[in-house]
Amino acid sequence: MSKTEESKCKIIPFEPFYTIKKTRAPSNSVEVIPGKPGDELPDFIPDFRPLLQRNGLILLSWDKRLCERGALYTAYWVTSSGTHRYYASPALLIENFSDAMPERKSYAAEDGIDFYGERKPLYIVHVAPELMMSSREKITQRPLHIKKLKSLGVKVDFNYSFLLTREKKQYRSHGFKKNA
Image (cartoon, rainbow, N blue to C red; front, side, top):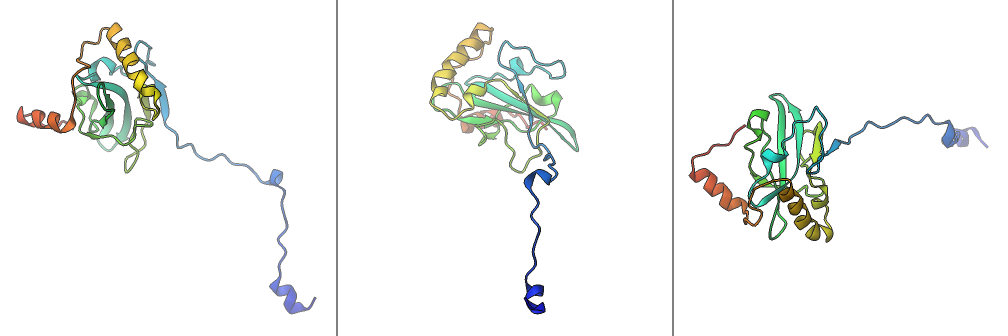
């Protein structure tokens, strides 16, 4: 081989896979806390389940995020009758969270959280994970979940037809303002 051929061709030594140091990638997962009706929550999690149940809706989950203003909470629901529609509340401070109402559609029905353009939650409490799945099983799961809620003493109207546009109009016509 001539000197010019040597300079064009470099041999890169092969290192077997087992000699490469493995490093663990940082976790991007969110702590998921099971919170099905009737189950106890960990002591550090406030129990919003009875406070967030609404007429025409089933509480799916809520999450907690930190921002410049402090801790913010967002609730997620699915309609309790008719077509499955998923909704989310605005991010609210804890003192306003028990009054949370759906403000927008939630496109994260699979996991109950909206990540797009938002900070990652510290945790999410899954109240009805079986109703978040996109499967035919959720059609049969919804009545079972409602039955469980009723047996625990929940007194909301599950037959109420919740429509976000109608509810927003009623909310505004009563002079309520958004809490932040």
